[in-house]
Image (cartoon, rainbow, N blue to C red):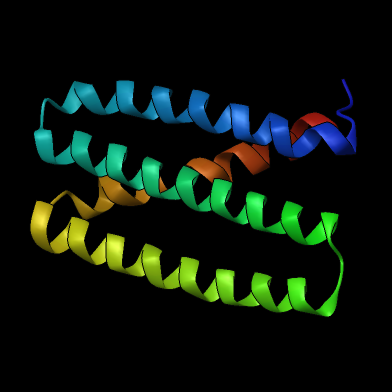
Length: 120
């Protein structure tokens, strides 16, 4: 089944939440708060970063001029800084399991891989 290119980003966004819930469900088998929190926080950071980037790109596409391109660049830098600070706080303050955090952060990557395989 082929996915229309216009619907692809929406499909990836929906699939993000499905994969996120599956990973959280799997993390419950470890019976460790640190592991489950790692998957949850990593997934929320990943999905939030994807949604933020998606919204910024849509704004630039709807208003294509030099100023909107500059806004996208600054939004990108600010998003990376915000994600870096969030990751630092999650690791330093919440003391989540770093491996579980990486699994949570892989939600969007897994969604993109699945969407690519489906469209082939």
